[in-house]
Image 1 (cartoon, rainbow, N blue to C red):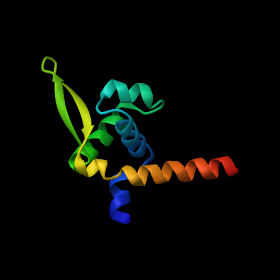
Image 2 (cartoon, rainbow, N blue to C red):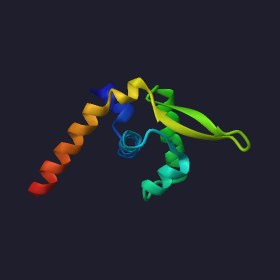
Image 3 (cartoon, rainbow, N blue to C red):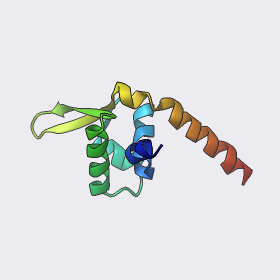
Image 4 (spheres, rainbow, N blue to C red):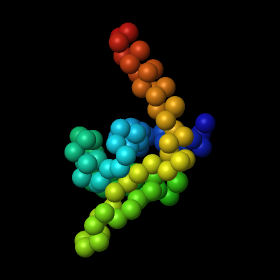
Length: 97
């Protein structure tokens, strides 16, 4: 469990993954718009970390200047049931409070 949390156990990381499950690909600006309050340096660090861990990949959609868009890998898509369980847990217990 500790190894899994090292990869995805941070608020912004989970929200980035949530957005990638909602949309096939996302650009940096898309994340900044959707994730109110995330600092650009934090977003950049989380994206780099997820890419290094093989959870997401990136491809350039513009060559000049180079601009990437991000997508889930198969490894990232395998996190889907976990994210759904977290969503359901939050919905159930947030309603109970």
